[in-house]
Image (tube, rainbow, N blue to C red; front, side):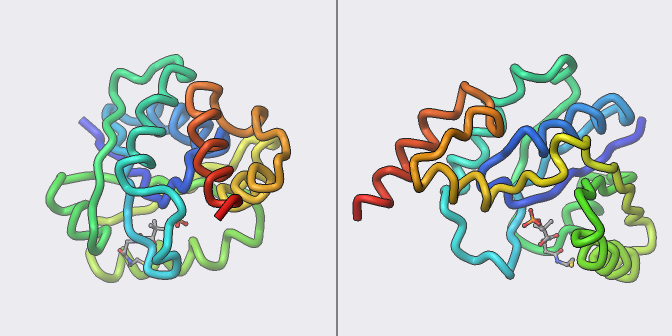
Length: 167
Ligand code: PNS
């Protein structure tokens, strides 16, 4: 039984993340999508509860959501990895610009815990330009984000960004 962990901020989840989630869920027996703390992004726009809820409500777009779990962890990824006796960390790579930081994180995690292997999945070509920050920015200025996030969460994202813009 191989367990993989896909960690991220998911602020909010996009079709880019869902592409990686769907493909990783096919490759491993169990996939834990872990809403984690990125110290470089201390002020997530969406709350932890919203980000977890958006993820769960997005899974209806996936063909095989049965082996996917959503969890959260505030601390070192490797500590959670050990606790869950996981086998692999999954990361998506959109472009070379992602590579340096992701490669560094993979090396650090391996150094902190020798069993923490990272597997990179190349982003689908349609998702190579997609990021949560871009989605937030487009929505904040009234742009159409329906091609980037599932319709199940679209109105909630737009509503919160609208409130923020009005303030
Ligand atoms: O979606 P993001 O913000 O690029 O995800 C980054 C994340 C949350 C996966 C990364 O910051 C992380 O692993 N945070 C947990 C803290 C940790 O273990 N840091 C050491 C590894 S560099």
